[in-house]
Image 1 (cartoon, rainbow, N blue to C red):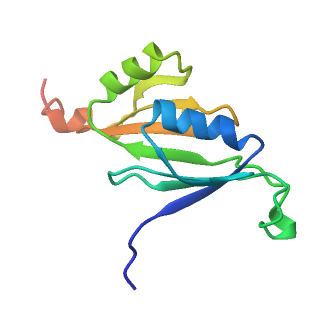
Image 2 (image 1 turned 180 degrees about the vertical axis):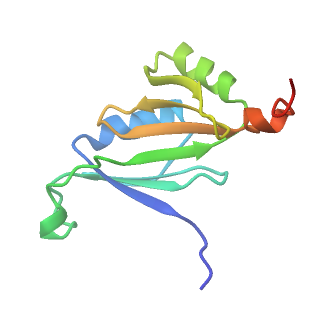
Length: 136
């Protein structure tokens, strides 16, 4: 098997709102669109995104009324602080402020108009790896 692309499909109430959010603030471009559907892509390694309107008949009956809840769409990048500043400057609400975890993960989150959580991550060496461990 050779995977040529990765796509996440998100069921949302308002496809146009999420589409505008991802194209305006996150650099996605429309690949295809129709009523209740949009396919978004980027030219880098980011996952493609398909947005489907909740209730759309192309979804199996047991999935039509589900919503993209409990999901975090995470992007690993460099220049995390600059990205947070850019998004804040564009008026995007930072729903989880920039923080650093003990294992070396720096992250912050935003949320699109349909409640899709987008997390930005930058990996840094944990504090213990800085040579501070064992120094007294």
